[in-house]
Picture: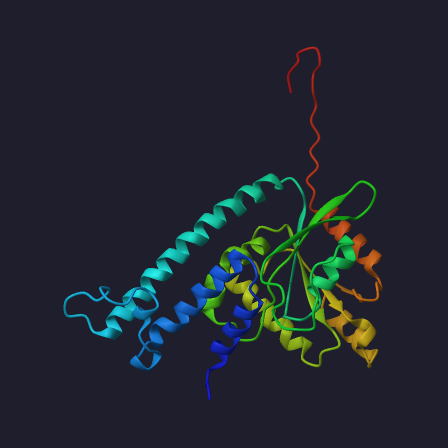
Length: 279
């Protein structure tokens, strides 16, 4: 029987969900960072996987060989992610003039469903943890004249391993560089207050807790006690109550995002002397 701790279980789930090259690279990096301090002979000989005969230096024990191979692989993965991040920076530079809104929240809170509903697209949505490991960017029209970019991100979880945050930092940077955050919360979950605290802890670790944030209480159609709506409106501001799946109050949400955008748009007035052709 295989026995693993909580961090190992989370990493296993991430490994099953990873689809893109970037996600697979980030998961492998997190797995190796998790494995390195736990290496003992009971893990078997990694040298068989990475070369076998000829990999051991003079006087090296098998455990030392395994550690050296893991560190070498970690170095390669870090370099691969740096290359991917350069490409991401170029894409980000191309959309720097567009208002960017990042969806953040506890895993399975309905972020991808909200993205689909607002953007009229079809990103994979499943009732499973960590379905989204890669940031998904979609254009959303708030009205006839104003468009934003909406970005879906990886879901958070309580006591998210630090090596996992470090490995997925390039993905989470989409939230760092966003102009605004939508914190999506499953209001039908009895632990939703704890989930908000977890998300705030991760945002604090990323250094963006003070970024303009609108809390979006999702899945209101599943709520059995309507008194909770009154409670959250008094405890959490600014906030919106919606159902992404049912399309409830989504237009109101768009208008609230538009209000955020307009409040943070800098308007400058300049006087120009046409005779002097100078400002």
